Image 1 (cartoon, rainbow, N blue to C red):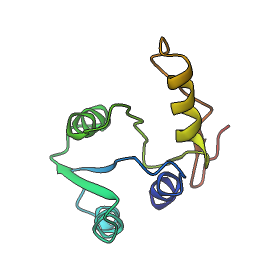
Image 2 (image 1 turned 180 degrees about the vertical axis):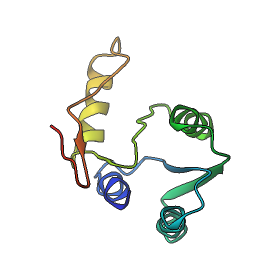
Image 3 (image 1 turned 90 degrees about the vertical axis):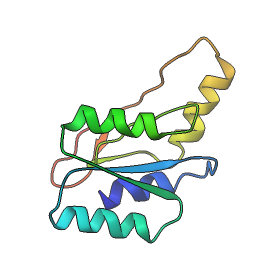
Amino acid sequence: MAETLDSVLAQPYIDRECINVNDGSNDIISEIAYELTNNNSRINYLYKNNSGLRSSSNSGIKFAKAEFILPLDADYKIAPFYLSAALLIFSEKPFVKIVYGKAYRSGAENCF
């Protein structure tokens, strides 16, 4: 999860909103998530009762104020210029509605 947040915060595109959704977890991971969020004004923390991954994503999307949304699971990272590249595609091709790339999962399992 720290790697995921770091990959978002490392983006040179600074006009972004980062929302960390805790889906009812009350273990050490939730404490870490809260600390990472609480110590960084660039991340908003949203706690909700446990109702599953998709519900958490939907809650984050509803909470968001941004025009474009990139849901990331806690074990995903984005490349350093991903947001800038994705937004460039949207600006050059207004008919495009979805932009995605190959996923890189952090932690014990890495996929390309």
